[in-house]
Length: 540
Image 1 (cartoon, rainbow, N blue to C red):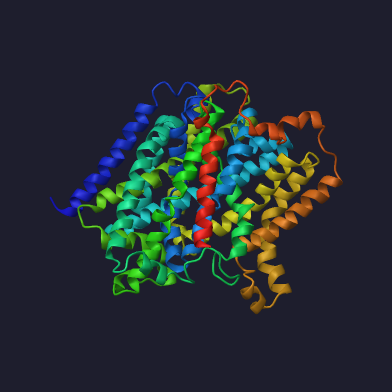
Image 2: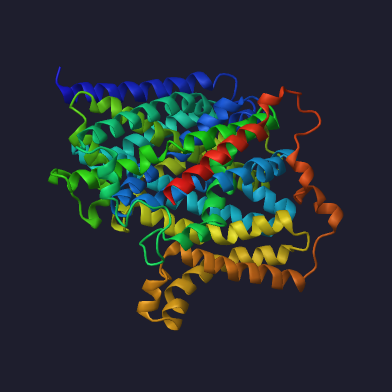
């Protein structure tokens, strides 16, 4: 049996296992909408944590971030180290708020805190972003692996990933994803670890070669004119894109809605925080290894800026022997499949609850809701398969996803933060920010900044950086939120008290079972926080 044949059989075997898990997980779940969409009250902390990590680790990260790791280097690790801030907010602010108010979808929170207009606008924005950004990007990235390594046409790879993910998701809903995510979680870290080792082993001077050839030097914080992630971009992205992605992203947050207890979901995010520390070894350092190899006598690893999406598939093709590539690809496909199915499930949940049940059939029973969710998954899968190939013509995975996501994240994060921390924030202000936020960001980047500043100033201060533009846009969104709120009538305090954050949410609910001190989420969160601070000090 040839190496390529063995690789293909390994990949096919993985697809079969995933579909079997989906069918097995579906037993008895299609009669209950809450179980189908969220597995409510069923999931332990370790399963949620594994699913959260697996869902966040996708082809946009593996392919896009490794490509940028090749070009930009260590500053990208900030995307993971600042997780200590946004995950802390998720543990102690967002999840307590969601769970104690029985929130099922992210737009639902804005609907209950402000009004249905904000909920409806956010629902539409979220659905569009998931279809045109997230789902399509992950499908494209997965298919890119097959194209570079096995010369399989891009559209064929997209079709296979879309069909298998769709069947898997339709079969078992949330339960199938959680069960598969634990399996996929193990596979992806094994595969990523093996690939890192194979690349690292070829470096004559090991880690020193990575440090010596890191673009811009081996430092987290770099000058304002550094491409992609200068120091002020790290700060500006913290309160919009990073917050949105980790705390307001339906696909990720929905993993926690099935928790047995609030303690389980808190420990799940602490668990995820620990594994975030390993993600740069899968998503950034391999790209930096490829750059080091290209500069130390291995010209086959050299790429141009236009070829950055080829860096990760190129590493597999050049480092992993034929016959073993299937095993590595299965681990990577685990990350991709987990994310695709999570997006399909989350989008169908949004359409089912925020569109169908609210606008079309208010009296729909559980069977009808599940049926609608399943048909939504079919339609989404079909559309995404057709749209995904276009991404390759729009600047590559990383730039396409990160820049457009920032436009959405800024107004949404502004509304959520104002809603949770300022009682005076009004429905009119929320609606205004949601409607004008995206075009405002585009206007600031494309017209206002070029009008006010010279090209030299823009380049010197990184004013064309989409993270920086996001921070500037957020300042104006906050001004709009405050201004409109002060001139419009807020809702009565009694109606929204439970939707405003207070320090009492730092404590677990009174009905949460007692546990020994070493089970404390605060304890393990504190340990992780110290580790993150130490890494910042070492790599600053």
